[in-house]
Image (cartoon, rainbow, N blue to C red; front, side):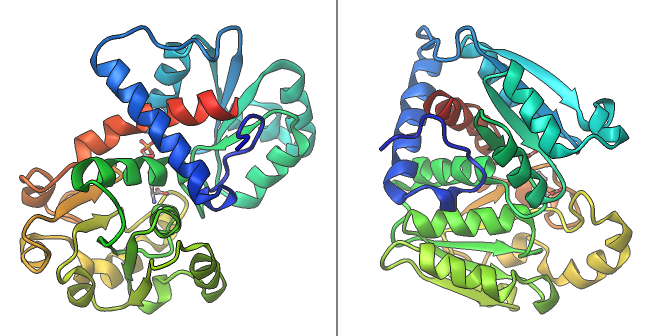
Length: 309
Ligand code: CP
Ligand code: NVA
C-alpha cells in the first residue's frame, strides 16, 4: 500500500484497506496528542499551500494547526487574491505551485477545477471541500462513528436533508467503503444523481447496503447515526428560499430523533443553522457528538497528510 504522492480528492480513489490505514494512523496520532507526546515531524522542511475559494473555519484552522504540529509550514492563499482571480488558468497555477510547495490543500466550487489542479501540479492535492465532495470530513466522521460504536459494519447511518450536497455524498461513499449501511433521506430533487448512486454501489464493501428515500421517518427508524448538514450550501445561496421550503420537513428535531435507535448519535459537520436543519435542543443534547466530530478533523487530516505528503 503506497499512499505517498497520491492526491486525496475523494475516498473512492482509495481502497478500503488504504482508508483503514489512514484511520489507524489517525487513532495513534489522537492518542499521542492526548498524552501530549512529541508529534512525528513528517512535514519538517515542507511548505503546504492552502488555497481557499470559499470561506472556512474548521478546515482552515485544523489544516493550519495540523501542518504546524507535523513540523511543516502552511501558506494560506485566498483564491481571489491570486492571479487566478484575474484569469490565470488553474493549469498554469498548478504548475507554479509545484515549483515552490510540497503539497496543496484546496477548497473550491467546481470539483473539476480540483481535478485540473491535481493533474497540472506535480505535488499531492488534498480536497478541503468541493461542491461535490468533502472527503476529509467524511473520513473523519467515520473515525468518530468507529470511536463511538466500535465499527461501521452492521450500523445504519441516516443522512437527512440535502442528499446531493458534498457532505452527504462523501459520507455515503466513505461509510459504504468501510462497510456501514447508508440511507439518504432527501426530497427527490435533492437526491444524488443516478450515476453517482451506481458508483456508490460499486464502491460499497460486500454486505454494505445503500438506500435512498424521500421519507425521513423511514430513514431514521432504528438508525444508529443521524447526520445532517445545512440546507443552503456555499454556492447555492440564490436558491435559499426554495431550499428552506423544500427541506423544512427534513429537520432533525426531538420527534425525529425519538424514532432512531435508543443509543443513536447525532452528527453535523458544522456550521449549523439552529432552527433550520437541526434544533438547538438536539445539537446541544446528550446524543450530539458534533464537537468531538470537529476535533477529530485535526487527527484524521494529520494522518492523511503524513501518509500522502
Ligand atoms: N465542516 C467544515 O468543513 O467546516 P468549515 O467550512 O468551517 O471548514
Ligand atoms: N454542505 C456545506 C458544508 C460546509 C462545511 C457547504 O458546502 O456549504
